[in-house]
Length: 69
Image (cartoon, rainbow, N blue to C red; front, side):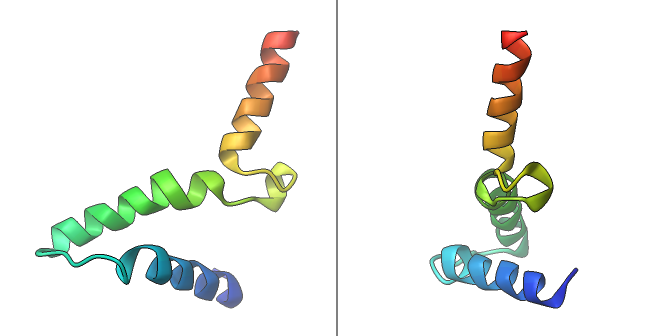
């Protein structure tokens, strides 16, 4: 992972998730981190490989194109 990318990722996770909650077990923390990455962070983060669209926006655009043809 690119160092700047990694630092940005962990900084965002720290600010949006880790600083806002406390967990009783490591399992709860792991589950919260997984959910944050899969449900919040990744679907809305823009990707240059997707034309600077988020995965959610890219899928919606792709589905509209597929149903139009």
